[in-house]
Amino acid sequence: MIDTLITWLQEQGACSQIQSAEPLKGGYWNAVYRIRGADFDLVLKQFAIDSGQGLFPVLADDEARALEQLADTGIAPQYHSYWPQAPGGAVLLYEFVPGQMWLDDMAAAGALFKGLHSATVSGPFRTLPTQPQAILEQADELIGGYIVQALGVQLEALRPPLIKLESAASVLVHTDSGPGNIIQSAEAITFIDFQCPGMGDACEDLTCFLSPGIHHLYGLPALSAAQEQAYLSAYGDTDVLQRFTKIRAYYSYRMAAYFVMRYYSQQGLDEKVSQAYLKAAQLEISALGSYR
Image 1 (cartoon, rainbow, N blue to C red):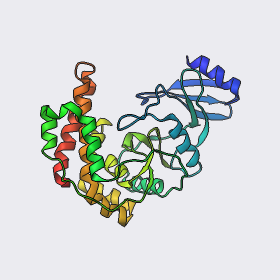
Image 2: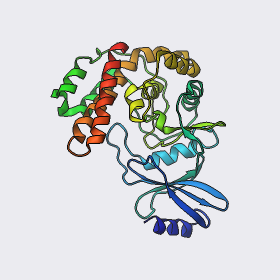
Image 3: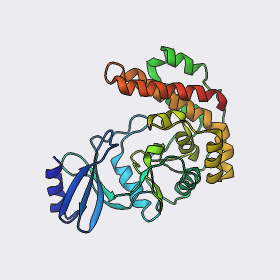
Image 4: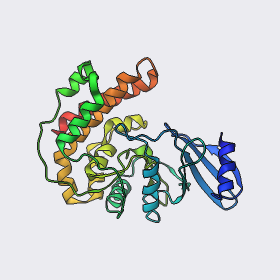
């Protein structure tokens, strides 16, 4: 299929003669390749699905739009082109980002997130829930009937009380902003996989990045209190950080609901994945009590 697609892209003038096409790891829903030629080094991402459903939907048009609007900022990979009618599914091309998955540079991470949330974009992007009630309602939808299972009952006991907060400043939010979607080298740090962006509360990204469950899924230990503080200090936006202390529990509760859903829904289908989400849920639930 990749050979047929490459031929099609060359016929469209997307790129010149492709010398190599190498599958990349990490594409859970979509096929991702590194394609190289004499004058280019690109990532080819073909979207298997395009859905507005779930906590981390796959939104091909929105990822292309985000990369195009963030071009030349260093916050996202450099946009090349987008082919929504490609055979087999929409295709996004962007410049390959050299480096490794982020590991422990808290200052660089904080600065990267601040850069994203300060970016000027015109959209259109989906509107994300930013009030506790809407976030809790989304958590309820995610966990569904699993709320009566043991982990669901444990999580519900930590449900944060309903409060009303002032409106958040609306910024571009990555949403899937864990360490696996951040690439760092000696020269630069950037986000990848903008496939579910939206306009909303910067605190959603902060919570995702700091989530102990998310770190576990990427094979990393939970951050220490000192590491968290270093990250938040580097982020440095007083208004956002004040709001973060009030809303973190709601985003964490929703994240835990997602982990619980994934744990139970994968049982009997993929036991390795199920167990990974079990541990993620346990870590998130354990941490949730300290955010209240």
